[in-house]
Length: 132
Image (cartoon, rainbow, N blue to C red):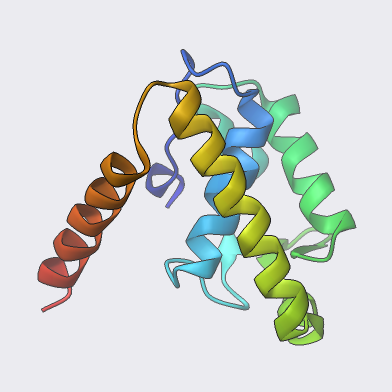
């Protein structure tokens, strides 16, 4: 399962931030469902070839924000409370802020907004074909 997450060691974004976003993205897109168990810290670290302390930091932060819950001796699970508690307005604000960051980073890398939209549309079409 941890292979569904992509970490790019050459990306200037810290590894813990990349993994946090990857887990949150998997939840939002339905690749991880509420109640589903995440790999152990050790397994995730081995699979992604990153330090176990980095994975533990990500899990702890996600637990602090209510995205996951850790059951001692059992594992770490996607938590329903977090998603049930979010209101639509808050969700839209977070998405808008995320889009602003992506657009800013796209421009900083020398790409246009149209380049980004074309890439996203291409990815969407690929996902739609895969799900048919």
